[in-house]
Length: 142
Image 1 (cartoon, rainbow, N blue to C red):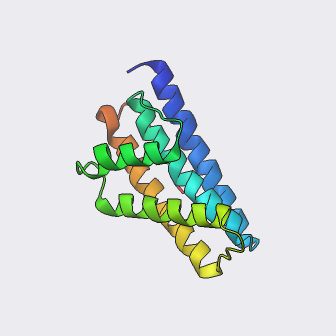
Image 2: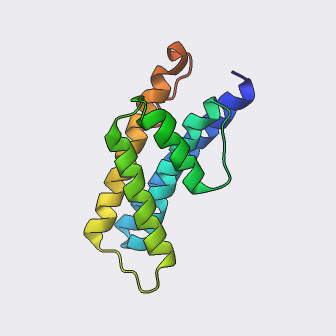
């Protein structure tokens, strides 16, 4: 484990937290499509924080998510619900960003925000336990 990997993981989990706060602000101000987008990215940055510890990275989102699901969810490191929530976030974000005339309801945006919070909660718990609790990620909670 290098300092660079730890620094990158810290940076990414801080980015995830900031993006989650952005999602909440978008939701509170009724920018539901933006809340969906930011919710997905909050979870995505959290996943990338985990992968940084392994020095693994990909350019494409689908590769990041596939790797995480294969090596962390399917192997039981993370509960299957984390993988399901990540998939839900990704699908809704893609629809809201790329489908013409796609409308996001308040309930859909609320659900996406809850999925992101759940994913990040699991990731933060993992990071807290990682490497014999040498790294304190506990202050990065939604």
